[in-house]
Each structure stands twice: as C-alpha cells, then as structure tokens.
Image 1: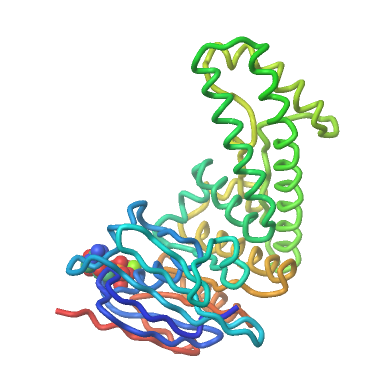
Image 2: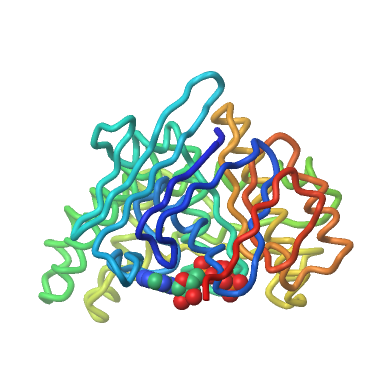
Length: 342
Ligand SMILES: Nc1ncnc2c1ncn2[C@@H]1O[C@H](COP(=O)(O)OP(=O)(O)OP(=O)(O)O)[C@@H](O)[C@H]1O
Ligand SMILES: [Mg+2]
C-alpha cells in the first residue's frame, strides 16, 4: 500500500498544506519545529484513529482554529481509495467518504511507526515491549484484537471481584473463561515470535532474537485445562493481593543481541537493531498480508552513525517509507523540505 498524497488542514502548526509522496523513499526535512513529526502524526492518525504522541485529540487541533481535517489518497495494487479524518469535538474516520472503522481501514492502510524519541522504552520497559509486540500481532492477525479485547474485559470483571474480596468459588467461572482466551493469546504470540525470529535470521547476518517470557509458565503442552488449574493455584494469592497475578497481560519479551540483552548495548546499537526488528516485521507483514505497510520513521538518523545510515537507506526495497530528519540526504527518491514559518 502506498500513500500518494495527503491534504492537511488545521492540524498542529499546519494551516493548510498538501504533500505528494514517492512510492519508495521519501524524506521530509527541515528545521526543528518545522512540522515534520506533525505530518507523520497526521498519516498515523488515518491508520489508527489516534496520535502516537498525545492521548487528547484536541491537542492536535491548530491553536487558531477549532477543527482539523486530513485526507489521503491510498493506492493498493490497482485500487485507489481515499481515507479521511475530521475532528471537532469527536474524531471521525471515512473510507471513500463513508464513515468507517479501524478494522476496515486497516485492510487498505496500515502504517508502522518508528520514533527516535522513545525507542529506548521499547527495549527497556516491559509494558512498552509488550505493547510493541501486540501492535505487530494486530497488524498480521485480525483475530488477535478480538481475543485480546475479550480477555481484557474478562480480566476487568475478575479484578472487580478480587477488589470486592470475593471467594475462590466465585472466581472459578472467570478463570474458566479466561483460561480459554489465555491459551489462544499465548499460542498466537508464540507463533508470531517464532515467525519474526525466523524472518530476522533469514534477513540479517546478526545474532538478534526476541525471547518470549509468558507469565503463565509450564513445561507441559498448554491446554485450557492446564491453564485453568494454574490460574486456580494462584487464587489464594490473588485473593490476598486483590488482583490478578498471572496472565498474558503480564507477559514479558526481551530482545537479545549475541545472547546479551539489547538493553545493555549503546544507544546507537539499540536503535539500529530495533530498526532491524521493525524491518523484519515489515517483511513478515508482506509475506502474510501480500502487501507492504507504509513505514514512518521519525528522526531516522539521530543516534545512528553514517555506516548504519547507509545500510538503512540502502535497504527498504519496494516498500514506501516516509522518514523525517533535520538533515538532507540525496539518496531518497523524494525530498520534501519544510520551511518554518516565522
Ligand atoms: N496544536 C498546535 N497548534 C499549533 N502549533 C502546534 C500545535 N501543537 C504543536 N505545535 C507546534 O508545531 C510545531 C511543529 O512541531 P513538530 O513536532 O512537527 O516539529 P518537527 O519539525 O518534527 O521538529 P523537530 O525537528 O524538533 O522534531 C512546533 O513548533 C510545535 O510547537
Ligand atoms: Mg520531530
């Protein structure tokens, strides 16, 4: 999939502008505060209905107006669609002018975002790494989000009971429901991590892998009954602490380089190797979905040395990437220079 153009009005510092993209490598460059990240944020918003920077949508509206409008032309093989978003009090998404939802939009438009401002968190913070893997899995397995939503809702109910100091007997029926959902979620994550590690191994000559550390551990083959009995074993402790203590919401993932955790390496090494993981995911996405997502790379060159920049810019074969930087690189197919308004 390719975003060929985007029209943005009343969004962040962008009054009204239109940008045209190449189907391969695009670089948006310009001074600090020129609006580079804002363009990526607008593109991301069309594919996920939210920002990657802030929770409050009203913060994205230009300070001089009270609504924003974004519209993009997307092409997929020979199909062409428009995806747009409007915000004034509420955000709406439209596919070809009809109100639409994320699941439908993601069939036409899916972005993968890599931001240089928080990549460390995706390596060092357990909840962030889990969030990154979850977002990857959503991209390639649309059922996953349904399992996760059902699981989260059952977990909320169970935690409510635990807060109310209920008995083991009362928890049992929730553990039953949860155990079946747990197994599906764990199976999907295990399969995904295997596929992603294979992709990394096949693509790059580095000893880099992600290790999945499920919160529910067992040497035996996972089954609903086995998970149920493990959940039941934890009930007395859960009642004592008044919250759920095991389950996929507490799963861990750790990235290893040469069998050492990546979090112990230098900033540049961390960023470069995390980018390799993103590229491997994009290749896996292409294999499973028969199309590339659009890769958004904010401040792609910060903390990366020139040798690794060359490796990165020389890569990205057929997919569309939209990168930003304060620097100009002529190896991109299209350069979009932003000027900062005084
Ligand atoms: N709601 C808003 N209304 C108007 N301007 C805003 C709004 N939100 C942010 N800005 C401003 O928009 C400008 C562009 O921000 P953006 O983060 O896109 O810049 P950038 O080009 O990515 O800069 P850098 O190189 O520092 O990353 C900033 O000056 C910011 O203060
Ligand atoms: Mg920026």
